[in-house]
Length: 114
Length: 114
DNA sequence: TTATTATGCTACTATATAGTCATACGATTG
DNA sequence: CAATCGTATGACTATATAGTAGCATAATAA
Image 1: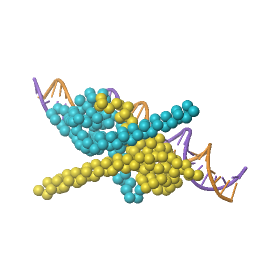
Image 2: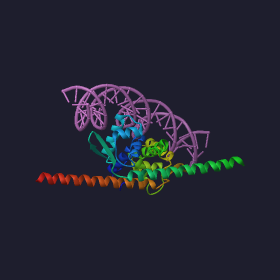
Image 3: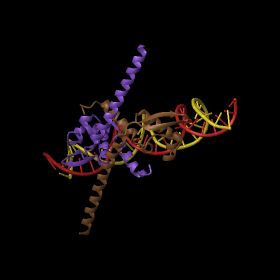
């Protein structure tokens, strides 16, 4: 605790907060294979326009997306693919938890048979 | 998008949500060097008792902590040190952002001198 | 210019949850 | 058993924010 200043920890918390919304993760997934404009993101996620716009702003302010106006439309792109490493790690952890739970269920099942 | 089911994404979002609170990160940091009981966690974080207890429950339900009653007190322990890898990655990303921002400021400064 | 399309902005509502107080529970001790 | 210590829980308030509707703005086309 003492070694990590509270302000730094708060920034980390804020970063996680940005990633803690299903809609925003959907947007990030939509951009996984490259830049897309707002309309395309709306189509791919099925979210409302104003809503998508809001989330794009939040993600951009967090430094996760880059905004690139191009003619009439605006393209958004992921700046740091590290995001997907984060998701990867969380997914692995969740999988392990599921495995352990199913193991536990098996054991319980075994006990019931006795 | 289509390749990742929405329910899986929602689980990841929930996981990030658990980590998106400063108080909970403080608790995790307090447990970084090993198991502690609730009283010790309260002392180290400076948070209220009821509050700590609540956060401990959330962290335990998320599978991040393990609960171990021991006599009168209850010890909590981190189950998956991967948490700290996550924080590490986020910190690195934040540092890079800061560096880029300071670079940008330098450039602006240079322009102003002309 | 006017129309159209793409995006952003400003309230507003509804919901979730952090923190706190008071109380309850559970294990140990006398 | 009663008392006490450590922890958990329920009720409550205050705050934050997701989603939405409607309007504003900017770029292009007719």
